[in-house]
Image 1 (cartoon, rainbow, N blue to C red):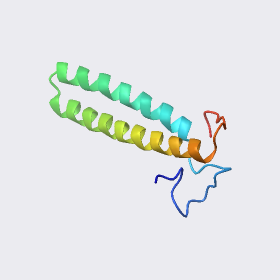
Image 2 (cartoon, rainbow, N blue to C red):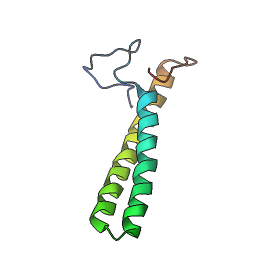
Image 3 (cartoon, one colour):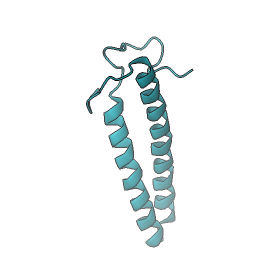
Image 4 (spheres, helix red, strand yellow):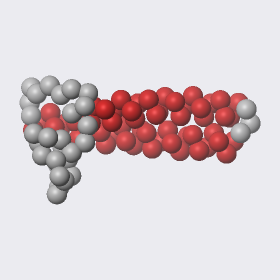
Length: 87
């Protein structure tokens, strides 16, 4: 079972360990940005830069999956609670 935050974390359910909604926004922005930069780099024949951007895009996808799992766990722990962008 996935918990909403890691064990022994300094945060609590009332005060989250990390701002999941903000992380979701930033990871989505990173994914879009790195995908666009990768396409532009490959078109400019800068293969090394394109590969680097693809690696960063994959990191953003992994982060998005982790964030969504933690948000789902938080919804299970706090049904009906609304969270702002910074919570």
